[in-house]
Length: 77
Image (cartoon, rainbow, N blue to C red):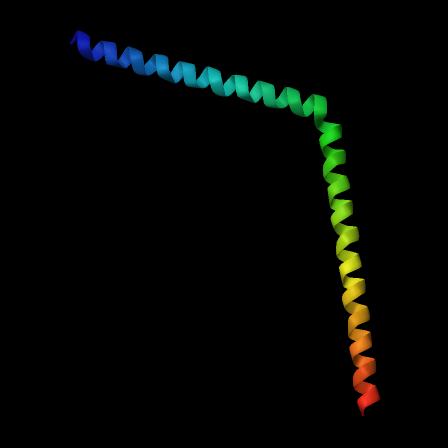
């Protein structure tokens, strides 16, 4: 019976270590977000703004190409 008790003890120790590691990661994550939250938010906002501006430029270019094609078709008629 002592072998079974030893296995239970090791399993409990492993679970405790796992819980401590998860708690440490959670605390570190909260700390990093608290310290660098505004900088991360500004980084994502800048990236979103850059993507929005680039997609508007692509739409403008394709729209002008359509207008050129339409003018060419009308000239042929």
